[in-house]
Image (cartoon, rainbow, N blue to C red; front, side, top):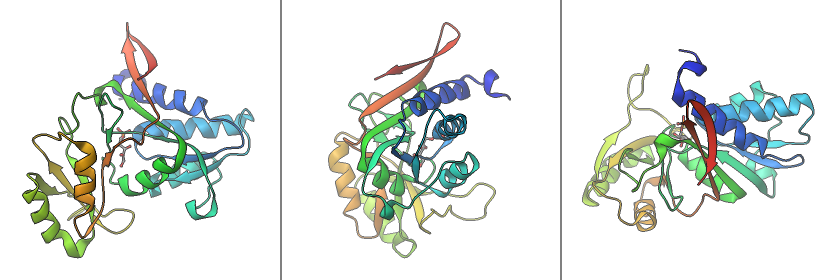
Length: 236
Ligand code: 5RP
């Protein structure tokens, strides 16, 4: 199926391009992970190639982002080599009306949280299917855990009222392994009444590296939609 015949892909592409169009020359850019951000990375690369954009340094949030940035000619640096991030562009799995997010559909939420929260401006790029009234209503909450602590962390998440499931690989036997060599537990909570409190509580479990709740991190949410058969991008 081509991009043009798939409305979700059209929305993702439009919103990715819209975010990439906001990037200015001489800036350090956090490069997020996922299919929506991939369009943004591609467009930043095209702007660099055309000369419209100059002197960009990308900070990738994953191996995927690094590979794409290299493919599209975006110079990269390690986070430890820079003293700021001007803007980060990243996708999300759910966005609530307070711009709080669930991320981690690509198991990259640990590095994403580091990079996105350091950025002066964090732009979230989503298609309108990602908008929810309450976090946790359509997507499980990803929790990255070090392998030796899988069993106790799973028990602790159950005690918190969650229904945890180890994320398994597709076209890979066994569980998925993150860029840091860890595992991901996806947790169904009946209700996430207080995302800020749950984010902290889960991160306090020994063995948890990071969870996918991003509370108070997003500055701007751009939403791709189809209106009257045409793709449009609006700001939340
Ligand atoms: C990866 C993420 C992604 O940003 C999130 O899963 C959205 O992905 P996509 O743009 O492919 O829908 O958090 O860990």
